[in-house]
Length: 200
Image 1 (cartoon, helix red, strand yellow):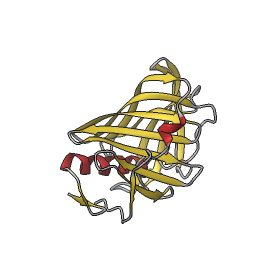
Image 2 (tube, helix red, strand yellow):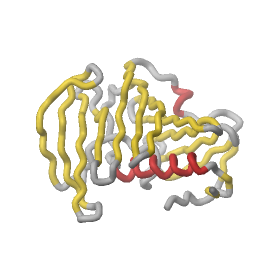
Image 3 (cartoon, rainbow, N blue to C red):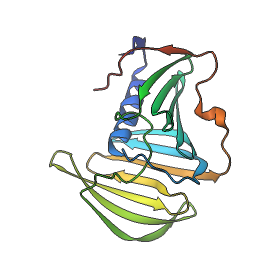
Image 4 (cartoon, one colour):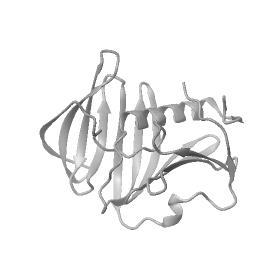
């Protein structure tokens, strides 16, 4: 599969497509200023399941997925208005503007939601979470429904489900604490690749 002039495996191509869908679903840009943690991440898209890791530090975010070729890393830098997609096995990276529906958008309830309904609180992964049902414009019927489990302490959802698109993302093994700044930078010596991101 060819992207940016590079040949990717089909599993990796699917992974980029699925994580781009995550960005399309969850386009809010804010996070809690105090949020600093790492977690396991489980992303499900239809029948595909993709385990990964996520690191959050204020308004910076890093996602890692692993396939037979190695890691695919997405770094979101809100302060720079950029997204970096890092391909370690090629020692290359792609730089993209943050505003697009691309991998790694912050998990927040979209500000353009048609409606929000709080349906109660519960415990999830050791956090008190508020369950929020959200209606958006989109989907096959013009209406898209999503459910968020928002951890008040972290200030963001740790679980999101969109049943219509058979899509969900969930954080587990959440560990609060300082995250190293280097996690949110392109590794030294990596070559910047220019080109256009193409996703079906």
